[in-house]
Length: 92
View: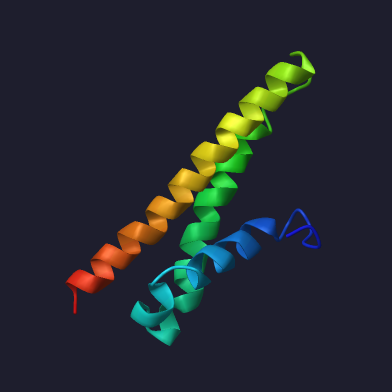
């Protein structure tokens, strides 16, 4: 992830979550890209909220807000994966 540009980190994280889940065995190959994009979109939207941190707050507050937001973003992305897994297992 450190080698990824800021524009591709969301897609790289989405790919990683996809690969480390049950999705590779559940998602038809033609759905892989759109499934990864769904995960990446959730990550991107979460980070968009962090852009509102304007530097007017103390650095410790910004770090705490960013840390909390990061955990929320991770939880939301994992939930997208788990929801897709449940939906795909139910359709079998």
